[in-house]
Structure formats: C-alpha cells, structure tokens
Image 1 (spheres, one colour):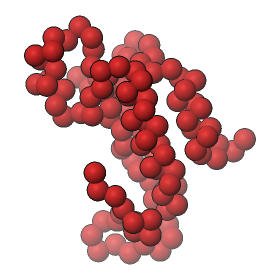
Image 2 (cartoon, rainbow, N blue to C red):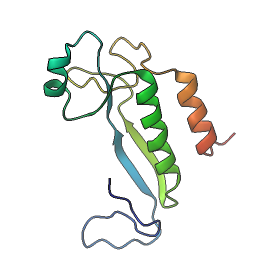
Image 3 (cartoon, rainbow, N blue to C red):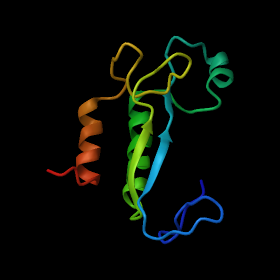
Image 4 (cartoon, rainbow, N blue to C red):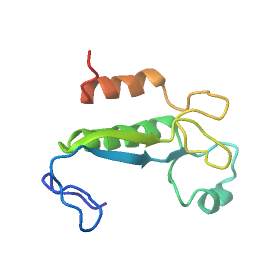
Length: 119
C-alpha cells in the first residue's frame, strides 16, 4: 500500500498542521474467515476485508499494522476496528460471544513492546 513520509500528516484538505495530536479513528478491520464457510463462497463473502485463513496470519497482519502506527511520531492514538464482531461485521478480534480469535496475551505483548502504556 501507499506509505506516508514520516513528516507528512494526514489532514482535511486545506487544514494546517500546527502540532495538534492526530488520531487514527478507525484502523484494522481484519477478518478471520470462519472454517465452516465453503471455499467457493469465501471470495464473494469476504472480498471487502483483509481476510485471513488462520489466527497466525491475522495476528501477523495486526502486528504489522501496530508497528506501522508506532512508527508515526505525529499519531497520538488510534481506535482499532473492531474489538468484537457485531451483527454483519465479523472483523473483530473477539467473536460476538467474546471468544478470542487471536491470543489476547499476544496482542497485549505487541502493545507492550510498541507503545508507552504508562507503566
């Protein structure tokens, strides 16, 4: 995908960057393809998400995304989309009934390694 120069902030056209915090308010949206979905339906059903066949692939992409965010000095915070599955959006890190799709301790370790969590 496209990469930003480390000095380039993403702003609304015409806005000037004056050192204000920049928030990424919707990042992620990775989908773990349910194993019960027949292969011939997967492309049709999951073409609009970053789709992965297993937890390891999803976690690797999540790690890459977090490393990218951590490398942007102008980003003050982010909101991952999304923590849990909800209705037709099944791209959460947890299922609708809150079962983990990836190991929570591995997600926590990624965050501890990359972000100052005030500890």
